Length: 448
Ligand SMILES: Cc1ncc(COP(=O)(O)O)c(C=O)c1O
Image (tube, rainbow, N blue to C red; front, side, top):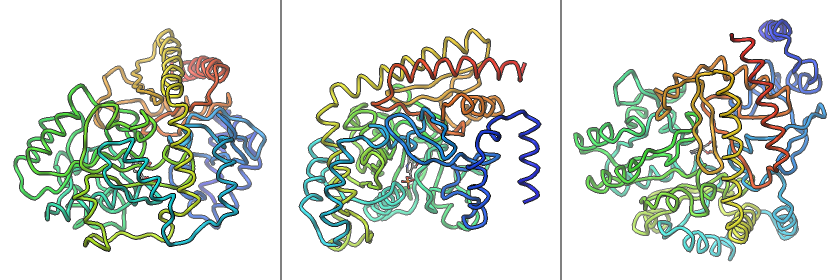
């Protein structure tokens, strides 16, 4: 509690009016910290001195317990492509609730969903429906190992694949062998994950060519967890070539990009056919549903017919499957309008921020693609984790604080991505640009 009081004092000194306008959130956070570890159910949700608590979300906005309305550019970390509580999705799910929420025996709609995914995504010859991105990537890794009878997995430094032990791995200096990034995971397990530099073909090629123990490469085709990093021209096709030539399974982790970058995700957008793909987030527009998909010969390794065990009580539950089916159906219906529109909205926002920030004389880089963008406070090109780390995090944090005061919510970390949804309006963008203008001026005055 001492820590808490000092933080509050610090923020008062910083004249942060955030804490004078969020009494109820502050009280809720105090209660939360005594019954929920760190007061939050996922670490990124904590932000000092305490996060705001939300009552409801509609369209592009969230309303807090303190009656503030934020324009949301976090959008469930990419899940809410159609925005909060999209009416024709919610109405559809309401009907399903009265039909039953969990059967734990197969349903026709699971078959329809898998067929639908196969019809949209050529690489998805078979699909197993799951609940979270973590389950999907963990299963994908297991399949790669079983298929190749090899143990090691290559991860691109800065990509995130969920909070399982094979993903919670970081580089030890320049060494490619992973070490745990969380206490409670083991060095033995971490050492099975090798790290290569994103957007660096030779780093991956050297690693793979010099070893014969690599089962698979897992990659975010557009990296959304080191800020936003875009694959350079030919990079993904080179990754495909290297994996193919060396008999290594290529896993595209499309938990963020799936259904968002295009209806067929990054594999469609870039025209690359990986061996396994994982989906979650935008697939269910805010409902917990995920999928691991891929080539038939790999997917058929899953039990009970195959020997790769994967199971979940809630996998394929009728509520999540209804959500995914309806979401995909909506995307098919409005996709011709949706994808160009969200790209235009994002481009307008990014162009506006670029103009404001240029005039103020900050060193900066903005990466954007489709409906995703992130601002870095460095003039260097941000093309991997090393360059993303060059961004001035103090400035980013001040910007976050200032935007919050002006009713704009972006993810509170430099290493996340901002998301535009189908329901962000021109008015939202005008208000957001006005807020960025004021916020950046105040940051400039503060930082000199
Ligand atoms: C690319 C990527 N893969 C996997 C995951 C894990 O998904 P989940 O949080 O649903 O377990 C995330 C989560 O943000 C992600 O961004």
